[in-house]
Amino acid sequence: MPKIIKDGQVYEDSWQSLSLSEGDSASAVKVPEGQWIVPLNVWLEQKGTLKSRSDVGVQISIDDDIELLADDYANLPLLAFDFPAFMDGRGFSAAFLIRDRFGFQGELRASGAFIRDQLCYLQRCGFNAFALNEEDLEAAKASLADLQEAYQASADKAPLFRRR
Image 1: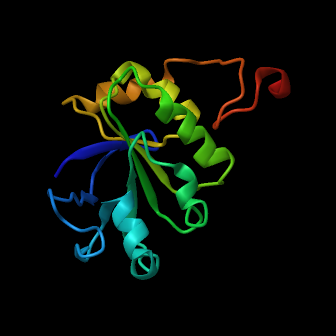
Image 2: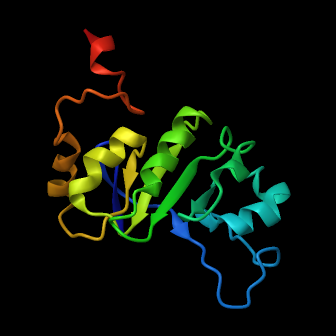
């Protein structure tokens, strides 16, 4: 079973990702029992059925409109945000908005092409779980404490002048 970093600890990842094959219809695909992360289009097509389940999370890609889930953030247990390239910063902004504007309280997971050096910054924007493509997650989790003090406000801290 793969492992993730969540809330500063390494855990077995009990969630599975549902992916659509070419030609699969988002409204026709069956979401099995268990903890599944479904693509946004599957969630939107099957929302009436899936919203009653507490074991279904949503995969968001960089080009998805996060406002499509505005009414659902309060009830979703997990959002997985896929980074297509480690140099693409749109996910940082989206995470902050999801936490700040929409008040999302569940697991906000970063997945895809990001690097260990970005963990501290991802956490400051609101991510609390990380699906990394590296073997030594214990060493990677130390990266969460790379910055001891920051001046600007973030999803996890007030600005420095407000903390004095």
